[in-house]
Image (cartoon, rainbow, N blue to C red):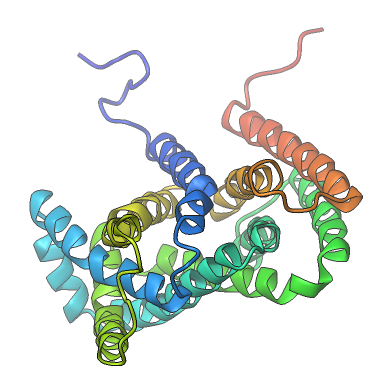
Length: 306
């Protein structure tokens, strides 16, 4: 007997995609707390630990859910491997930039990058994937763009961080959406591609006398947990990207930078300007318009009461 919310006997892919996306961006929103605790460790070392400790975690997941064959299929698929080499490079660059931004006190610049990212996703969805946008959705994009411009005016010195984070992650999400491989095996292959570089970097640091596990027991534990902490939201994101319209996924991404903004200002004391206030207002109005438009598209028979 099917549940009332699942008349087809299985959950709607779009509904699952929405849940995955919300969880991914909520976790990404609070991730600066983790990286701030590692501010004394070099960003390259942190990223190397993320890669090294992610691989065994992903291997256990692959075996536990029986997706070993999917990994082998991806390795034999030239198109998949070509795309995964590109996505591995993009996510490696994105991780390094993000860790640098957080540990160097530029959380607001990082959050600006992730405010820009949904706009890039909407445009990629429209012009590359040929997804159609309604007039209300274009209005939402325009309002969000106004908010981002206000942020850019107030953060020109760190704008390169924002643009690089935006570009690398928007392209990563687009390529992962079209790659013929599911989220978990795809991420496992990406991590395996980066693994030799990460091991070589840490080995070189150890040989040079660098404290590659940090200088305290707490830092050592946090670095060891880097795989689970950083891989979980990325798995959720790639699962969402394969189930949602790319423009819808783009609007969900406003969640993470909003949480990051709050952390930057309320917890870490970064300066909140008038431009930030203007941006928040414009962006949240845009989100409201876009969500209402999506609801009306999903329920075309619903009409307003007379």
